[in-house]
Length: 520
Image 1 (cartoon, rainbow, N blue to C red):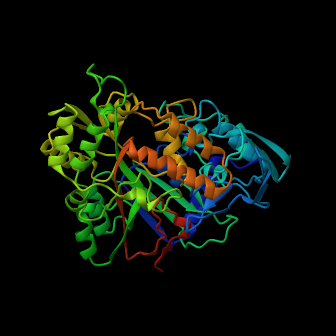
Image 2: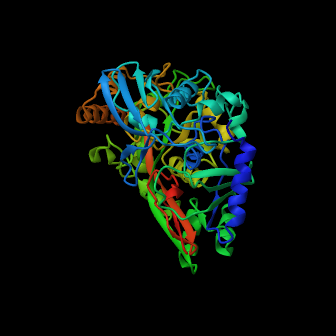
Image 3: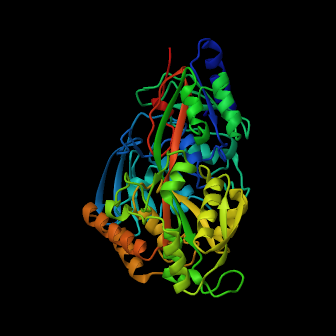
């Protein structure tokens, strides 16, 4: 019989008690995770956190290259079938042995029609057990990005799911919970000791992890601190010793503080504006944003360099590209953006017959770095160029139904291509005409059949260089039509006290504390 979750917690508590000198990472975050179930919401932050407890068949290494994790090898046995050879000797944290049944149960669960993450495996068809340590995954056809997708599919213990009536997925957005919402049992480097939503989640070191630990952490205390000033004060006072959300406006102060180390880089996340492209706007007017001249006027009205200087203190990376330079499919030639020219924008708008165009800009104030400040600055720039914008700014929870429901005239969106880390992500999810497996985030309702053909061609092209060339061609056509208006890659700043010796930071903004070293 397997130990119960209570048994796991008792073991963890005992381990903590005997470790009087436990090395503790006190992690102050800007927000909480949604659940202990990594399949409960398509949120990269929650999945990244749960990657300390659960693991996937493959993972990204320090250089963001794919390497084996719970799978040691893989091969393509036919155009639509991949065979995975599993790592032997791995145990879940309740003592159960990892094997092929766990992979099949996890893939079945995550691809369930009710799973919020089913879109993360767009080409998945089925999985078959070859033997205890070999699994065949069948796809809908040739598909080159299966490994990228699998980095985000964390593996459960099939027996644990069955014993706890958690074989069906939970859904944080719909309020559907089960045992996995508040309990966890992975194969990863840390074990969940306790969780109080919106207050604290505690992880402790797993001494039975199959991999060679490179960290020296005994305990992680994860505390959401949503207020940026409070988070900074907590770091300076020693209440926390790490945050991956150091606010841009406080970076100079933190850099000058004794014993504080800052790590900064542009992230992979590109902030963009999208346009309503239906025949009519929500208020019934003929849609002026279907006129390319209006979109071009919008583009040159915005001074990206000034935004970087004033809103982001020089920390953002102004961009004309929908994907960051680190993403396969990126082309430097597509990264150019026009010089701001309010008079030229005004002339274009007049030529299109839309001087003084009234519209609402739907903006979030809690989803991206300084998003509300950005939108206020953009409204001012657009006003000088002859537009008459109204700013509609509110928390993400209120704005997403307007954006996703096609009720916005113009809206903000951020896209990091995670977990795929390939230009195909933005093409498939945002640019393609909306359909069952396409254009999930095509919130504007546009359709470009010629671009669609290229995207679909890329989805089955197994030659990497050919595929990337097709993706770049599709991005170029989307840029020519200003389907989306990219602005910048948002800044990313982590801060830590002298208690932390080293942290591995990548532009995907995912903490990987199994590689973190605390000062001894």
